Amino acid sequence: FVPPEDIAKREGIKLNADKSHYLISVLRCKKSDIISVIDGKGKAYEAVISDISKDNVFIDVINEIQPGTESSLNLILCQGILKGEKMNLVIQKTTELGVKEIIPLITERCIVRETRKVKRWQKIAEEAAEQCGRTMIPTVHEPIQFNELFKGEVYSKFEVVERWGIGKMNGFIFWEKGGISLKEAVLKISPSHLHPFTSSSIHLFVGPEGGFTAEEVRQSEDYGLIRTSLGKRILRAETAAIVSVALVQNIIEQ
Ligand code: SAM
Image (tube, rainbow, N blue to C red; front, side, top):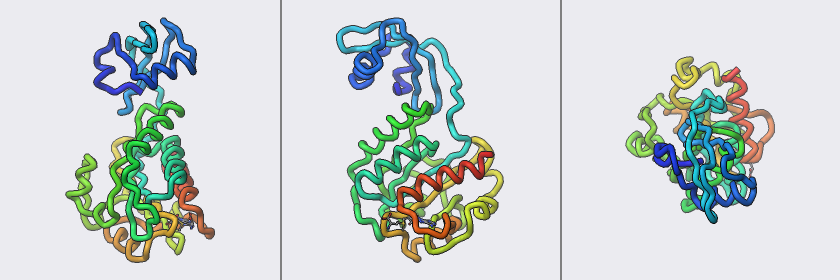
């Protein structure tokens, strides 16, 4: 990953210390080796290592490439904040599975109200995106109170184009206490949201360890979310997050 403003220089781009170390010491790259570079916003390039001096690697961009590794859906995972490693796992795995954004939610039953981990979570998303060959790095947003998310003015801080009003939010709230099956729920989503890249976002709401309250579920339904079940058994929150992203893609993308 090289930031777009650095890629714009095209030649003599100095990589940061972490990336330089990785190329020199882990991948054992040499001058003139060809590498792939992503800008994290959806573009990928072939680049050549033009110089290695001391601990610094410099690259020149050769040309743009189209790896075609992005999901055609704009999936936004709205995840009740989970304890330590579980949240890290969800961010890593759902990045591999193609989510475009992750919104950490502070809900009534959140055990952890950790709001200072965004940098760490964003780094996990960056590493996972690089590892699996994505061209986009999902944005991990600042944690937000569940209630606040449904207010347009707060949501617009997330630079999401749409502003949500009653009945307008697209997606599913996963509830272990009942709901329609995901296959049925997908049919209720307007077809315009299912077309590759013309779509607005599909939100996947997964609760924290203690689950959503009935009131939170009701409130989200007012805003258009569909109460959805992932089967008869109560899944761990991290299982539910990973499985829901995989299933939604599998059902819609085919
Ligand atoms: N106590 C366990 C834990 O610590 O992980 C179970 C947590 S479960 C209540 C967490 C979230 O996973 C729920 O809020 C819901 O979003 C999702 N979930 C789990 N099982 C589900 C199911 N069968 N159907 C729909 N959603 C489910």
